[in-house]
Image 1 (cartoon, rainbow, N blue to C red):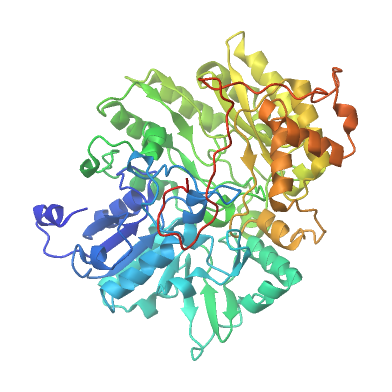
Image 2: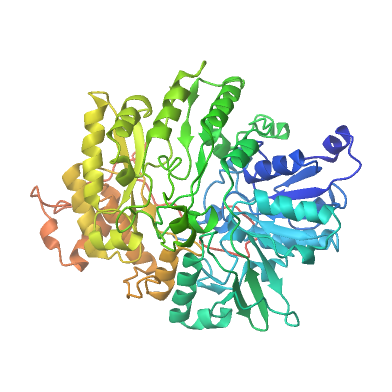
Amino acid sequence: MTPEEVAGRGWDRVDVVFVTGDAYVDHPSFAAALLGRVLEADGFRVAVLSQPDWHSCRPWQTFGRPQLCFAVSAGNMDSMINHYTANRKVRNDDAYSPGGRIGRRPDRATLAYCQRAREAYKGVPVIAGGVEASLRRLAHYDYWSDKVRRAIIFDAKADLLVYGMGEDPLRQIVRRLADGESIADVRDVRGTAYRLGASETPPNNEAIVLPSCEEVSSDPQAFARMTEVIHHQTNPYSARRLVQYHDREAVVVNPPALPLSQGELDRIYGLPFTRRPHPGYGDEQIPAFEVIKDSIQIMRGCFGGCTFCSIAVHQGRIIQSRSEASVLAEIRGLVKQPGFSGVISDVGGPTANMYRMNCSDPEMRDKCRRTSCLHPTICKMLTTDHGPLLRLMKAARKEKGVKGVLVASGVRMDLARRSKAYIGHLARHHTGGLLKVAPEHSDPEVLRRMKKPPIEDFGEFAKEFRSACGGKKQYLVPYFMAGHPGCDLDAMIHLALFLKRTGYRPKKVQDFIPGPMDIATCMYYTGLDPISGEEVYVPRGARQRRLQRALLQYFLPENYDDVRAALKEAGREDLIGDGRQCLIPSRAPKQPAKKGGRRPKKAARAGYRPHRKTAKRRK
């Protein structure tokens, strides 16, 4: 991370400079560390420029001119989601920065970082990657500016974009650059996208030409068609190249990278990570690291296909799993870490219980275009055996120095219900008092738009989980969402009544955020379901979103006025009163006073300010 460290390793040059919007943590859950270790293992000299001051290009010159390229990422999160809430308010902290401080990265960080890299050393290839670039590789709806923005490669002025999990594409690119090929020669690598100039020859006829950026910006039907094609072209075994014109130029997206084999994953996770933040941060904690420092990732990908989730278009729907030996070897290394408590905080991935589950018929898998293996029903070709996962969990518990192995990743309940043994082990051995699950809603129509199972699945899972606890005090923490396309006030009242009936009082709730490239984002922007073509109701405006969120926590005194307004608007005054069937009483309850006898006031927050000069909140 410093020129002194470069000199200390005896290097006279650096091959690749990683630029990241996150603090540098040498842990496999952080992309810069993972990719940096992969390139280091191939013999390349890698430096990491973490959270540089983007107001000039001088930090990009810290390590001198890189021999091969700059590899640029906004970090583990999209920088706009990192900075702003669903209501476009400035967040109070940044989990990926030292001390949780905000202001360590710019809005749309990929753009600023790529442009500074270009300014620092002309002629050095600039490769964009990470979640932000990956999900903005084509024209996309941007919630914060409320408009369709063009593919990020045009504004970032990067030479190449790597989307999805980048180990294999980046290795190929860097090796070929080292062999003397130009950046224009490596445009054929899977999992990449590039800018096609107006005078350049377009790809061959095998490519699918999407509606142009101009079309999707002005025509909701065209935007929906584009979204449908994108999500039907995520299977790496059958996906075709995509081309989208932006005026006279175009962005070309090659098919996704092929899934890594178990051996390749094992090799990557067996690299010599220190599992610690860079010592330059001293005693300052990095909140995101504190959450995952004692966790083990056992797989990648998710075939659930939830419409509000970006995993399918980033990590892919095909599950890539590590071997049991590889996971246990990482656990043994973790046990030796200074300060390890003996408890592994999580053994999982995007979903906790999809380990080694995949299509049982390779021929069908290679041509399948389903957007979900679980909705509307679980595909009969899907292997749902929890046996390999159970064996891994049992082996992890028996490792010397391990006192407990917890599951903190979300559990897919419809899959779990296919294995009573899994639910039993989960309840008795792998839940530390609380287990996260995500039913998301109770209304059938909303759940259909989300591609989530019926709420009855949650009820049955809850019964089986409680029964498996055998008297041990374990609790489910269900996550619910407000403001999703298809959700109106009637649907939210349905959910509020469900919560009252079942006794759940969620402390934390989710507001739907339209992230780039999601199916639900297309519904939000166009009012159309891109897969079925049906029209969808969309809750818009701050008031509607506020009323829906209040109904999720109808029991809070500070939400009384909003809940009352929502019930009146929906014609459900019968739920206002003092009867057992009512949601809220006829009179507003007193709000609890703060110390000193004053009632709490709502904090004033600054909204979305793309050109703000300071990251501090407005007083």
